[in-house]
Length: 489
Image (tube, rainbow, N blue to C red):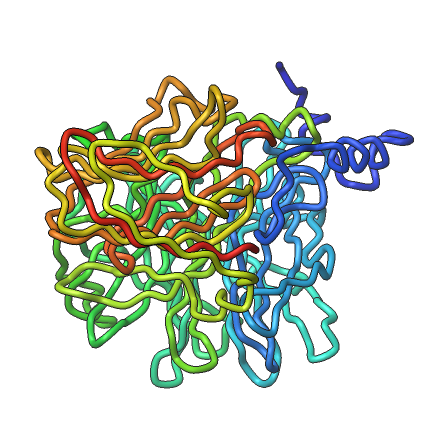
């Protein structure tokens, strides 16, 4: 379907008579609405933005196009939480349409200063020739929750050597100085990250490009995020334009990180190791982190991808955010675990222990559409063993270990309505371990899987029918000891 520019960049007040009510009715009748994930009231959700802890609450914004499920005029939609579990919809946080965000309030970040939450974001504009001109803008939220946009950009031009793909500022403070990284594209159409510096968040100086070893690594780097964790420097970003390599880079676009010595803010050099993917699943992008009240580094990602269509599109909404994840480092690798606060979601528990002998087995109480499941496999000599969930007569999502290849495999070939089939329906990663622990958070139309305490993570949207509720445990060509606990959510 071709969308005109006028249709694509409408504001919410330009909705046709009855359009918002129609969208709300479509959403109400959707069988795939989530139960405990952040999702839009209607319309399209994408990048998480402005994630910050301010005055006793976590504030999290997301990109929101209210009038449909294609990418159009982006607002910031505001949610908040006291515990990272129960989120309250506040409403529109940043409304576009001014001269410096005339075609959308794009991604950015938040930082607390002088008892206010400062929100720095990219304003998208287009001129009469439809040429993009990005601006880096600033808004502040006071203790009453009122958000005020600064009348002029804080960065009003793109430095020489870079194209108009110049966006997504991520701000942090270091010894009384403020820094931000932005995703950029060089004139030769390669991606990179650049660094700015400020004394007050109002006036910024261009410091130059962050020096990495990835000089020809995709054509654009989106959503950069720099922080230090356990005395190491970590740069997260989402490179576009990577070609698949074996089990790697199988999605439309990728998200990952490099770890090394802390960024030298004087020379802008980042000595780092190899690029590593953050998530092994199908639907993860545009991640952002913040520091929790107790010092933990917390990540939230977009559970979706640009240029992908989802079955919920026909119901007037698209996409959601991942659950918050705590980040730690182990041997130069980011370990992701669901924040401990999510245990508040647990209701009644059912347990089972069994030895699977070349069989597929079901156990009483192990079924449902929204739950947390922890399953541990040990003493396995089976060629393959694992779990089938959201299973029915014709549908199932399969999570398994292949012992010969030492891989964990997620297969959504039979998960219901297909998504982005041209990019495949199976994802794999290497994992050499004797014992395997899977922790699954299953919601109505998604699954987040943490393998061996977060050594690997798979995030996926799935769209089975409501009757597909079974959980089946299996071991093929051998045996495996299995111990599982399930909590209703």
